[in-house]
Length: 122
Image 1 (cartoon, rainbow, N blue to C red):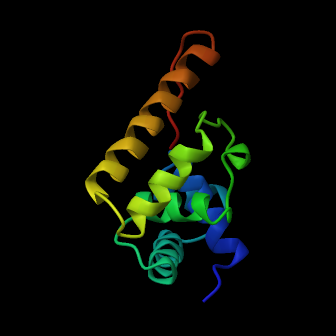
Image 2 (spheres, helix red, strand yellow):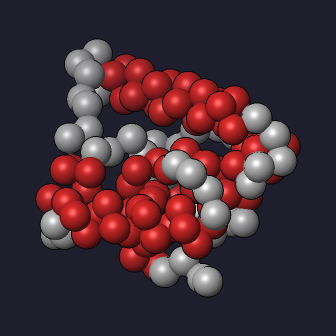
């Protein structure tokens, strides 16, 4: 099954570190619709969590790091590794840990880019 453009849009906003509530408000959706989109993406990719779905989407080039509002710097081999891990070809916990580290780094970067005051999504 192909992931829809709307599902990818929701996944991309999750990848940017935004909450379900924030996404619902900014994309004019209900929170249950946001959750349903995320579940659909995970089912279509055959992965257990959003982090793995993001890794697979990056690996399949369904989304690109450059699509993120505040992109992280990932090398092709890092994207490939995350995608393989997400597809069960490696350590799933490592994939989640790497992804969460990137989210944390991105949020710290936002703090510095907004005149030293931290702006958290949501």
